[in-house]
Image 1 (spheres, helix red, strand yellow):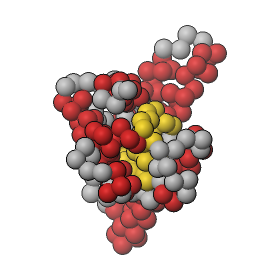
Image 2 (tube, helix red, strand yellow):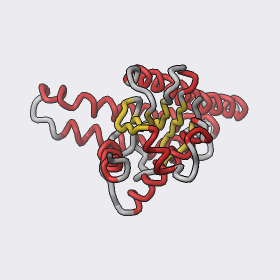
Image 3 (cartoon, helix red, strand yellow):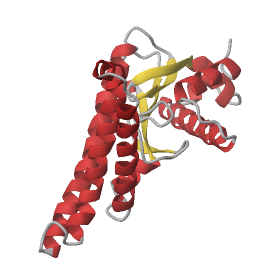
Image 4 (cartoon, helix red, strand yellow):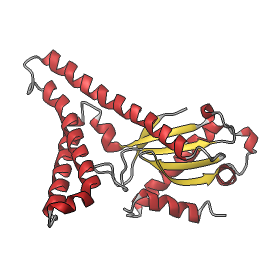
Length: 233
């Protein structure tokens, strides 16, 4: 089972970084080997959700375009030779990805306001279609990331964890989750769906607490620290 929600942590209109991944995946893999017993919760940054809304997409699209262009300029201006571009290939790709998405988020409003078409009805229809396409894309990406997580953890079971953009950054034994989050209940009385829901809420609450403290480091480091502090042996 999977669902798509929102996470907030140092929100900015530029995603795909360690601080703000395109998608945060939280999962439960129980002892049961049946893949249907897995539980997933996928969360998008608030900025991405805003880009899927015709009401807010113009602002989010413009902000994302601005941040992407600034990042591309920053990377290219710091290159001493063209040969160094390979060292920044992933950063450049992410910047262009943000640029293209920003344009995609901005286009619906352009169409709705008649910039790209003379027909209001046609403009609204095209804008809604593009917005729906962005939402479908995110849902499809969540499924792809689930398969990546499945493959990475195919030899493990009875664990819970967190992944960024389909890459696992943190795992912990389910027994430890039960001991800390369900100390007053017997493991047999807790469904895997409830485990995943409450574990997800716990992780998102920790993210918000870190943000309030002014912490702006990558999520991979944050969750590793969480494992050492809370879920240690």
